[in-house]
View (cartoon, rainbow, N blue to C red):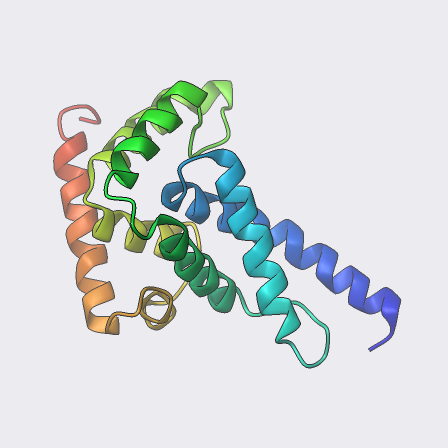
Length: 167
């Protein structure tokens, strides 16, 4: 593959997947800087395994982010509490803040934050990561049927959390 074509392929891949990787990493990390580090390290690690020097498959990067996030948080009993506090104090959002969509995004973000993590990560990988249930299962190390069930239950729980607000 010639260098100009490879560079164009990488550029397109980065534009397409980096926001999705960051979104996933943000829910796993305590800070924005940790999330960015997770993404950078995961992309580099996955790319090094590519024999042709091209971009790695997105599910491989998601799985690497997931694994590295677990490593980062291992031994830390209060990770979820600190993540919540850090996100609020830093004013981080899981979405880009456009004026016309801010209110709806805040409602969805609030519902997502109230979901149990095992539902939240499946919903995010499926919707924002555009992964199949088989790919979600690979990323999280669970059976595909479990991924599908968690997705369905997660959406049901979100509907309950948002009921009355959207009607």
